[in-house]
Length: 521
Image (cartoon, rainbow, N blue to C red; front, side, top):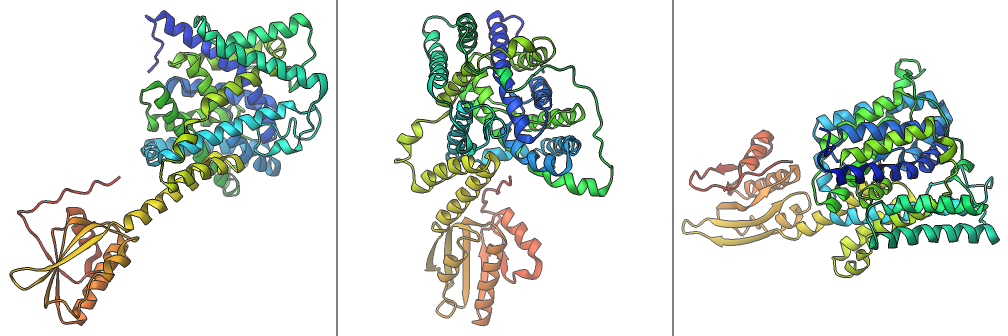
């Protein structure tokens, strides 16, 4: 279960150093997401620690980083405002149970149904969201949007921007950070370039006594160990009616974001994670977090990219990140609070550049227009709302386009056999999108008394297909003619038997002809 790679010193070193880098980047984001949700900073930090640790230990994707995220925080804010933080903790526990149930039910495999254009749109939209989130740090402390709006989509319009020397100082330090991260790997890969950049810029600010914003300007991260605490809410149906809708939405968003991040890390590392196991791990992590005063979380694509790009591929990287974050809270808060925000902004800008699929600009003119539309639509919805909504919209639009296109593929060829029967050979699926074209191709008045429909190259896919056959049977019955169905697959015959008297036709079995069984799921 644990992939420490004890015999591979280089791998252990990469995981440890990468985990430290991720932990440094987790601090301001966890604090900011806590502000977005309307809770104390430690609630976000505890979530980042516990969710990150548990998923790193038992999750389905080594090297993936989980913690408090903005996609969940924007849903939590209404619950906290209306009912208080204790109801949030109870919701997170229930959210965890729902995610475990999803994993045990093997629902993780449905992430395979997400089309590639949706995946590209998800990645591009998330890169834009991360970029917009960093722009909030260029606002004036205390003005609208700097704390309460940090990392929320669209909030930058409320920010009062920095100017003059402060702005130039921040931009310069961000540029130095990005240059170190970009060029250092050309000289050495002994240390993660992101970690070197953070340390170098921090020493530069400290040594030259530069006046720039640091982590401590957001909030204090000092605290103790998280303690076990059952949420103080009434255990009755009224409480369940309040928290259940939020728990369902949070569970869905968390799993969608986690599984899509898992797929992305799979592609980068050219390995394969386990979706159902990750669902269970996310659920266990959230249920535990809710009982220890955390706001819950899911996979974080930004931190996962930092980890993978810094060489962190094993479970030890995620474990190190979580434990370092706890050490920051317990003993190293004065030191961590002195890290310039410019260094962390620079790291995230590099993540944005690496996350965005720049190749999509090249392929968007070469792929079908429907795929290009889905890519742009998912990116836009991601920025405007949240990741889960964007993915759902993208999958629905892709499914509708698929149904529309395949509705055109049904073909029917008519002929007369040696027995004087009219034979129709059907090619293509018979489903809700193709039934109209299917019915238009038959002429009961002109056909012979005996009519055969051959489904050797087709299948009845759904209830709409059965209704179409029933309608056709009624037409031929009214015309005084007999209708036969031949070469139906086993799945089609099961549908017809299940329909009972719904379809009154003669089904001819041909034991010498076999059609491949349809595989469900």
